[in-house]
Image (cartoon, rainbow, N blue to C red; front, side):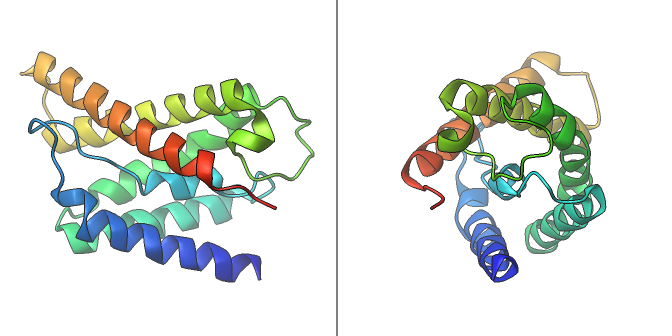
Length: 165
């Protein structure tokens, strides 16, 4: 049952990202990277291999529909690789507990710090790989900051409405 729900979220987030959010650019900089929400919300007891496989599949689907070969897949895998350490760093729970990271499970402050670090890491890697240059650093930093802020707003809004029973 858990895999069916996870697969539904996977499909919904991929379709939302490629059909709607990839076409939204606030002031030509901020693009919501909401598909990362899937990686943020996977249960804490997932194996690293399983997490990396989900991340690669997610990134690859986004890449296929967005015509960005490997960009999102590489970024999602790097984000998923760092996720267990960041979750352990900001989680107040015992490492052996199985829980779905969220605002109500971790508390707002812990979830906010966990989310902002992962979203910032994701936006940083994605934009660095996309531009592949540090020639225009102020624009790159503005793009990273704006992507992080708009994605963070989307994630906090959805997670505040969604509760895991």
